[in-house]
Length: 138
Image (cartoon, rainbow, N blue to C red; front, top):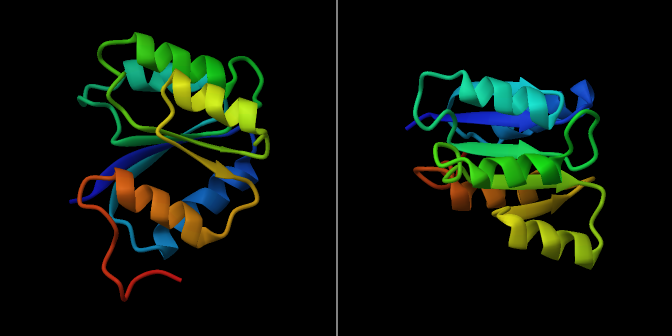
């Protein structure tokens, strides 16, 4: 079943890389939404007629306007959005920071730079339908 995803990162290059990694891994997507910060992501999610708006969110931490930590807090406080799994994809990977984000409600954490297989493994465990067929991928 195709999934609807959202990538939240202030870097268009990183958003494109994550998108390409998802495609190469063989995940079926109906749509991949993009946002350059947490505020833009929330605006898109809250303006979506679909429920839930997406099946999974991948977010960076350090972004202007609203960072990833604030985004996760807002998502988990919103009854209509709190069930969406959130994967943090960031270079900021100190043990304290990762622990704080997981306690806040992040489902997993992927450290940049990451091998495509790591992202595939995380998505396979969180998306409806699980991992793509074995012949797909890298």
